[in-house]
Length: 347
Ligand code: SF4
Image 1 (cartoon, rainbow, N blue to C red):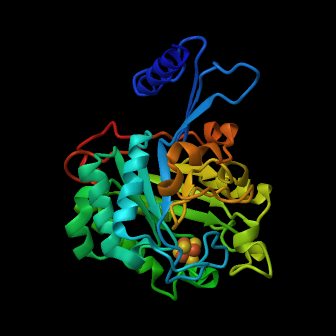
Image 2: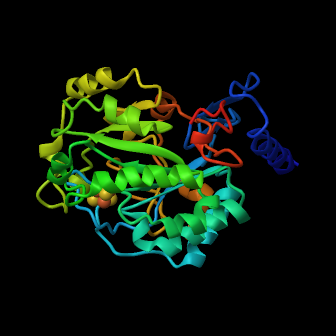
């Protein structure tokens, strides 16, 4: 009897997650951010943790391999592993069943495995019907042919660009001199193929004083995320790691200087180190959740399931609330963002 009541209570909570407003009824505290929704059921006796985590948005780093060599990279090529497509699909299905609404494919460079990426995106959008499928890429390997085949399954393409001075990109390791040409071409292609275009910039020692206002205005991305370069001990923290990002580091004041200069752009979204470290839900190439810089990773979600794995994920509630940004992440049904099909879209 007790179990039946408990089961019904949990079922109600899970179903209600989709229908209740953010500030739920008294006695139930719902905290909603981009990556994990935390339901505090307040039913535990004796102080045990009663929180149920729902993986609303997941970043799947499907490969660590990359054709660029950015000096500050914090997801380095420590392995060359990529899961078989069927495993990756099964993981996406489990996550969807656990409440995932958005998936973001990242790397390394996800286009190192372009066919795998396209097929997985199609599965997520078409079969699982996720609200949003996005990709973070350095842009160098995206082709018009790939977009022609898969654009209908992609809501957002986030392309990295750290400088509008090619010499600075080269100094950083972002390509060998043709990054800006490729980046601008990709912005046009995304417009043509109706994929929302986003820019990611890592603010670091070499670009924190750069004025990017004119260039960003000319590109007109829907969202421009600016990250403060981040040190993760086991990835880019020192002599033992594949990258040493210490020379790229900037102070909080220098990051603030960059932000103050660009904050008036409507698309501008800053992310300092404090927010970045633990407010993303990261799935690695083995389908394990990462606890970057905090503790070891979980077991594979194919092995222990999503719910069990999430119990072991460090989650900074203040971080995800601060980051905010459960923005409108589904592209308009037809046409690109530049075509004014959905003026209300706040990406
Ligand atoms: S493009 Fe991204 S994954 Fe590749 S080296 Fe640069 S930061 Fe790392």
